[in-house]
Image (cartoon, rainbow, N blue to C red; front, top):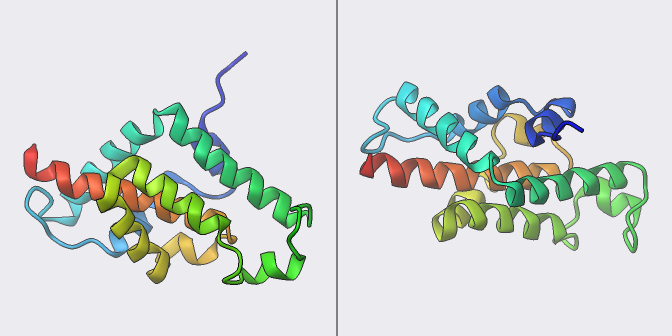
Length: 154
């Protein structure tokens, strides 16, 4: 049986690599090693490939995919459909998942960048459901933190 790839799962949801990169670059700022958007894009894509090769990260992302699918079907336990649809502040499981992804990839710097992306919701993040906006923001935040950190050492 062929191995399922997390990017294929995300693509099936309309979350493409290009849309992730575009959202990431919306909050780009020049930094040593990534002085231009072109350098930042190349470095971000490289860091994303590395991060997404980790099966643990793929499973964390997949947990968000499954939670989003169950939420859309009104099947999440102990959660009113309106709470899911409105992404109420009482719903923090989505934030916890985003934080876990960001920290897993980029450590404490990843957490900082996650918060930046979660608040601003650039690009695709503004179109995603309550779980996937945090999952993708965590992914971008962690990768972004690594991009800036490793760009200096490369």
